[in-house]
Image (cartoon, rainbow, N blue to C red; front, side, top):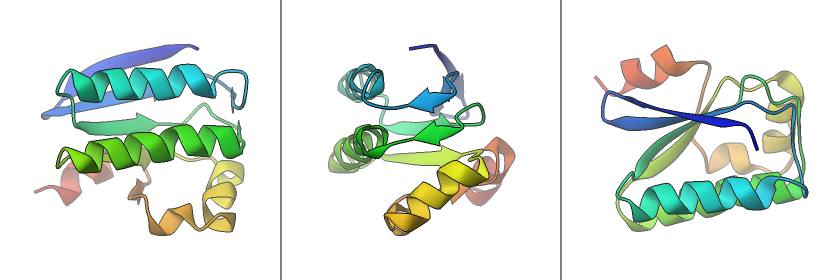
Length: 112
């Protein structure tokens, strides 16, 4: 899976540079997020700008990260969703669980 990490304003931004998050790569995404949390990176921003498709296993990987971060008093938030991906969050009602932002600036503006 093509991922890039960047530390910004006390958060770890996880740039997911894949067009699809599905059964073929969601396990790697889940492991990466869990490893970050174990290393103390409990405030994670998943930037999905390049993701055009996500299936239930991809949503499950993000949900696992969300729950594990919350268990350590952190959070995993989502930014830059394509309309098709946002529709999946809405269809599964995960938009009620995740904090979803238009872009990184909106995330940091909400924290001030």
